[in-house]
Image (cartoon, rainbow over all chains, first blue to last red; front, side, top):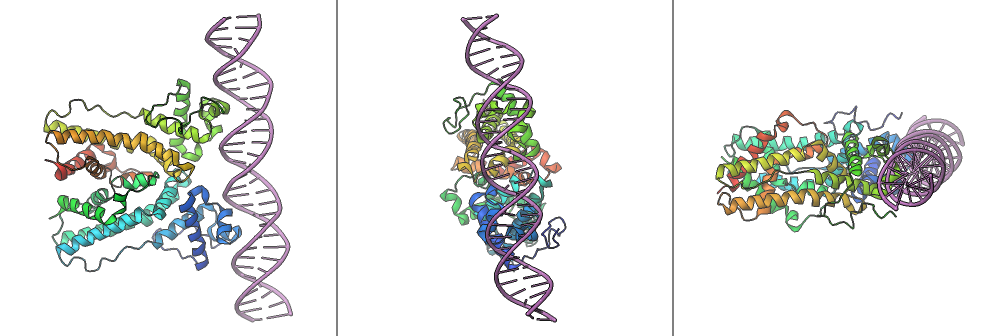
Length: 216
Length: 216
DNA sequence: ACGCACCCGAACCGTACGGTACGGTTCACC
DNA sequence: GGTGAACCGTACCGTACGGTTCGGGTGCGT
């Protein structure tokens, strides 16, 4: 049992695991394979060949195939960055624009091929392995974003720009207005239409409707 | 090549395939296996044992494993029934109640373990096999429901109860308000909380908000 | 120069599973 | 009673893939 294997069970869910540069390169290759061909395309032999490393190293670094998958998810989650929200509540218009920018970033992440591939992977594994991947994606992805969104919305409420009882509830409505059923359709393999590619107007429409419901 | 094999490629997507009673029993067993253990739990040998049939029959009926999976999806889609909407636009209150009932039924379907298992299956396969399963689920499931919803909303508009430009757009908003991110969280394996199990109040809240946006 | 840590590439093993073949049984129909 | 279709159970085959082992190579500290 190699001591350096990536074991998500023992690592804090909110702790950023540190991968060596070499390992990050390999994980990036794994991600590419995953985006191109789905889970069954990511075999240990195939990854070793693509990334020009040995299977022995893969097993030393990640323990087993599940550890590799978990590492891929954790690695990609650590790559996603949202725009800062410093001093975004100067006035009503800039705050609304800030919310729209947040939603646009959210759409950009969720509709990207990378995110779709990882969601497909986690969903496909969600009824096995005591569901480590799904939990990982939720904790490192969705819950992080949700927390960011809640603080943003709370800030708007404190400044008298929004009115709601429950920030989580308000965020879920914003999410629903923005994502609608596009996410699940993309996950199922439907190609994105032109309207779905215009993230900016989708975000603005969603925020407009959100303000109709929760604007002060 | 058995002549009776279920081949989704040659069957019209909107045509209901006819499975013999014996085959339906087997497909029900397959569905059970799928709900309990996910895709990898549905092996041909396992299904043959569970359903007390021979693998030979499975291959004769469904061609190969992909055909079996497609048949399971088609079978379950044919089982889902929505409440009739006959004469539901008598007055404003009953129409709104009807919309709420529709949304509640939608939530009931999408949040059921069966639907979740089939969505997980289709999503997991969506980057292989030229994506037959995802297309099947979309055409036989989502698009059917979407068509039903659009006619319902159009009816409301004709009676002066709703106001919108694009019925598809309005439906997507209704969908987003109702589903929010609950579907994807359940797909990822998160357990449904008590609030998520109260379909009726979720539906009513969603319809209330929908009327704030699209009520005449 | 020596040893040690790390790693690559390839060969190897065990197993699970998709798919096929075959003998035996039931049952409908003539 | 005979015949053939459908089907069950089981044994079997080929292969793909997860995981292990081993020989050799490279660079670094002493």
